[in-house]
Length: 192
Image (cartoon, rainbow, N blue to C red; front, side, top):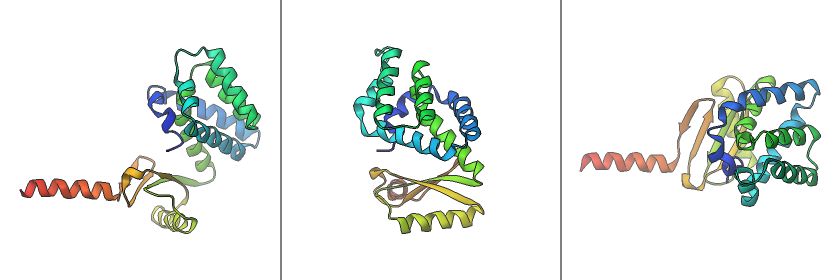
């Protein structure tokens, strides 16, 4: 499951908040020379939410009081030894009922961090986990095509069946077997 999938359905209405929250966190992390640590901490929080359906429900639930959400999230982040900046930031999100925007905030933070490093962020979706050599070849091919360094994340989506979907910014290249089969079915319907 994608790390942001647990929260994705609740974050759509809050996505417009991602920019200001991510920019504010980015500015503080940059000032403290903590960009990498903050990015890793945010990734760990997303991975945790992806690994726990109960935590995802807690975060999305309008029934759980703000204070309860804030205490629960603080306890979890303390237990995992989360960076204080990340812990405080997620606490602010909980206090303001903005935890649903966390996936979009993390995506925006990643983009800002990649831009600072002179990279372009790319996501490769595959049906199975890729080994390091294959991931490296994809990253190198994208870097050659784009003329820039590439920060590549991989995500597993078993529904792709095979092949690969690459997203770079608003550009999406779909070379998945699923899409190829759908195209073939469409062509065959037209021929019948």
